[in-house]
Image (tube, rainbow, N blue to C red; front, side):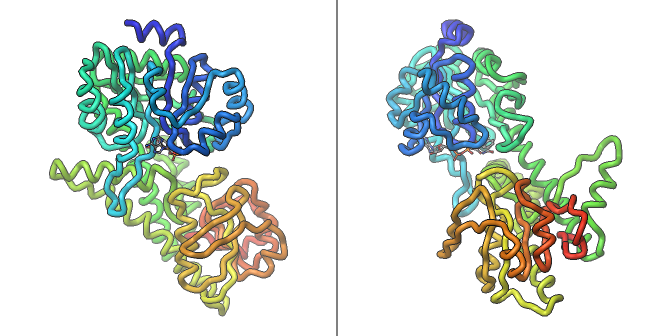
Length: 435
Ligand SMILES: NC(=O)c1ccc[n+]([C@@H]2O[C@H](COP(=O)([O-])OP(=O)(O)OC[C@H]3O[C@@H](n4cnc5c(N)ncnc54)[C@H](O)[C@@H]3O)[C@@H](O)[C@H]2O)c1
């Protein structure tokens, strides 16, 4: 097959559509592997930055982006007509929810609009965006087949979910194992041959639907387990039991247990959203995925739990939330990354703001924050800021925080992430989610 020869000689031209947390690392990896790569994005500012070798995604190494751009192995464009030059197209656009928590695949549909114009024989098209089972065969395939191309013969279509975990120090795009489900056996063969060039292990599957379902299941699994430990935490709080000690104790079992940790809610572009893709689709089959809805309900309640516990902490000190100076530590959705999407920290801040609390925040990854009409600027972490507040509220436990300093100077520390676990002194000032 012509496309297989091009893959093996690494002369196939790769188009990566959507240069965000998923697409940019994938584009750089393929360029490093030796493929010529064109990145496509609808945001001109991102395209300009890429073409200057100016990195904006923390999982991408600055020097690696600069090198592949300088060596003309990678360029970016907003001109989708360049898709006609590409032999392989990887779709990495966002898949958010509508306000009513229904799948919004409009970005995929918009890319398809371009692809139907520029698709040509001997092309491989792979959807990497997370979506509901059926998208590749029900949405992507019919649109491309309408071009008169024959799937499995001169057009190859697959789904290969991106599983990358931004900020993970050990697992990056190249060593995160990859699932591949092709529409036909030859689609699978071509997609597998492509990913094998740059990714350490590929697992071929019988269909795109299995790959789509597996990806959503992975995220449902996390959402449900986090909800389980969040519920346990609320019970431990009532019973005055330290939930972290409970989790550590359970984790001593040498088989059959996997620890998950509580927090002020779930965030990011995956865990709070992806499960609803499945629950929406399941209704077509008269199934109501109750675990998904229940997990969502418990996780979405956590910011309210945090607020009511903060009220209790202040009350015990003869203070109330209205007018209290609260210093929030960490606002991104998880530690050590700059991604603010769906962050439970911002949800907690919005709730506190509504109750009249006076907020300041510290976050080395977020210089400014706009919350429902209020603008905030990040404060430097110093003793005076902490001494002057009513409570230091840790919502995202960045490793850059000086936890000894925080506990040394704040009158009380409400730590919703157990970021203070290694602090030796002033432990009497620390309140955890469950004690
Ligand atoms: N971020 C993660 O941790 C992660 C992990 C695994 C899977 N995913 C999935 O990967 C997909 C992409 O996520 P992301 O985090 O990279 O999103 P992102 O928002 O960081 O990046 C998406 C990019 O696509 C661009 N874009 C949007 N609409 C477009 C269009 N119509 N045409 C061209 N470009 C367009 C945006 O400008 C942006 O640069 C989603 O389906 C997500 O669920 C994300």
